[in-house]
Image (cartoon, rainbow, N blue to C red):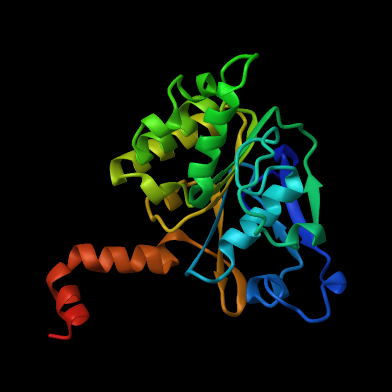
Length: 251
């Protein structure tokens, strides 16, 4: 495997499947969970990809919560909760940490990012202490477009030497911003950072020094960008748009 796990903040996770609830309710009935014993992480970038419903966000959430992040996102210092809907999968995860200590970290979750931005504004309205939004560019995340607020977090809040767990960070980013995100990732990797990313974006999947896992109805397998449906379908569409449209429209 093309990575030095000794330099990772998080080297791997192991699941205690023997302790799973006997009724195997969600998320324990997911193929990606049922068949998972151990998952190794690249010291730089690890991708988790797959179709909707395969358990990507559930697995990302469990890893993040086991590390100590708030289920709805943010740093370890955030404790807000708008709805307690996260699964108990994190209780069955054993983390294998590297020799280095992370000085920074963030769980970025696109679906609950609005709640994170709201919590930052609420905390800044309370008296005392430096403004939290100053760590995000100095402007309320709600006073920016969705894409701008996402990118402000990546640029201003991510400081390096950290573990960054990102769940669908491309959700509000244009293709140009996604390429800028790749450049920002590379910059942060140069500052000894480690990324674990769940994404549907072939652009964000393109970081070369990485490993990619695909979640399927049969379990988890390693793959490459060029082997993913995301890449293959996007390439086919761009190379032969008219034919693809005729197929889609049944003409």
